[in-house]
View 1 (cartoon, rainbow, N blue to C red):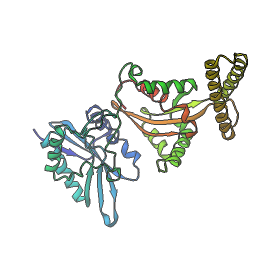
View 2 (view 1 turned 90 degrees about the vertical axis):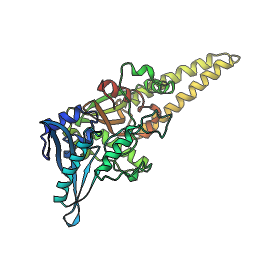
View 3 (view 1 turned 120 degrees about the vertical axis):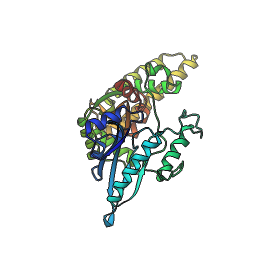
View 4 (view 1 turned 180 degrees about the vertical axis):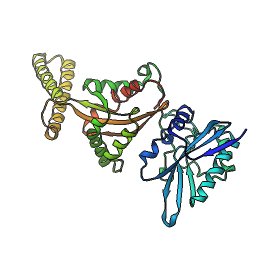
Length: 350
C-alpha cells in the first residue's frame, strides 16, 4: 500500500471523485476555481494503490512581500476518519506551501456537526465530530471553535437543507400551504433559463441589496457562474401579470358592489363578509395602481423574485436570491418558486 500526492488532477477524474463522494460540495468542484478568477489555484489529490482517495481544490491568494495563503473552501474531500490519509495529505500540502511562501492554510470542510429541525435548535454534536477534530489537530490544525458570528468564518456555519423526496407538497406545514394558495390566487408563474434572464435576476438582487443594506454580487459574477456550470446552472424567476390581475379585480369590484346593493340590510353577516371582500379588492387595486406608476399599465409579465441555483453531484446550492419587496404579498418565495425548483431538480437535496 502506498500513497501518491499530485497537484494537477485532471478535470474528469477530479469532478468524478467529488460528485460521487458523501462530502460532495459545489465549492470543491473543478470549475469553482474558474469562478474565483482573482485567486490562483491547484487541483490536489491523493492516490492510494492507483485509486483516487482524496481531492482538494486549493485557492491561492497572493499577499505582499511574495507571501500567499491557501484556502480550501468546503474541502478537502476525503474520508476524514482515515487518520493516515488525512495526515499524509496535509504533510504533502504543507511541503508545497513552504515552497510557495504560504503563511497559513485555511479550510472549512462541510462536516455535519449537528442536524436539527429549524424549530428545535439544539447544541448537541455528533460523536464523530470529536474524532474529526482530533485527527485534524494531529496535523497541527487549529480549530476556531463553534463561533456564532458569521464575520469569524469565510463560509457560514449554518446551512438550511431541504431533502427532496416524492410528494413533498403533501408534507408542507398548513401555514406554508396557505401562503402557497395566496401565490396561486395571484397567478404567480415560474419561468427558468440561464443567460436570457440575467438582466431581470440582477435587477431583483440589486433591490434586495438596497433593502437589506448588503453587498452581494453583480451581473458579471452571475454570468461567470452560468458559463462555468452550463448543465447545472439555472435561474428561476417568479412572474406575475399585474395588468390581468387589475382587470380581474375591477370586474370583481363591480360584482361585489352590485351584490351589496341587492342584499337586504337585515342580512348583516352577509353584508359584513361582502364589505370585507370589497375592501380587500380596493386595496389590491390601489397597490396595482402604484405598480403601474413604475412598470406601466401594460399587458406583460413582471419578474418579482428569482433564484440562481447550481446543481452539482447529488446536491444543488441556491446561491443567490432576490425579490421585489413591493410584491411581497404575492408570496413568490413560497409557491410556485421553491416548489418548482424542487420539482425541476428531482432527486438530491438543495
